[in-house]
Image (cartoon, rainbow, N blue to C red; front, side, top):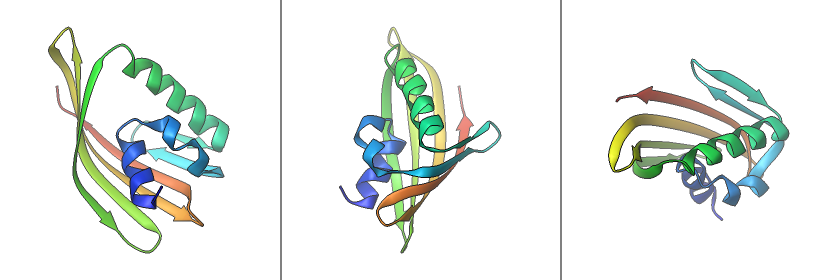
Amino acid sequence: MSNSSVAESFSTGHFDKCNAYLDQDIEWHIVGDTVLKGYEEVANYCTQVSHYFETVTTQFEIHDTIKSDQQIVVIGTGYFYKEGIQINKIDACDIYTFREDKIIKILSYCIENK
């Protein structure tokens, strides 16, 4: 998978496709929320998010993907529905830093819009 595909998959909640691309020393900074350090912390958090995704219907839209030598920026919106009613909307910007085709850092800005 290309770095762009990995980043877009991660940003749209397809974490299982991305595990092989996470560096052992990855850091994920979710601005205003938490900082996760290391593969295990990031993988465990992804599992928790995946469990939540199983309880709702999700729709993700990628508005733009910006690429540079070592970074991919994914800008998008996530919609969350329960019983056909929108319960949440998240506008997000995820900045991925790669080294040798592995994600070494993610910086996520998420704005909740109900």
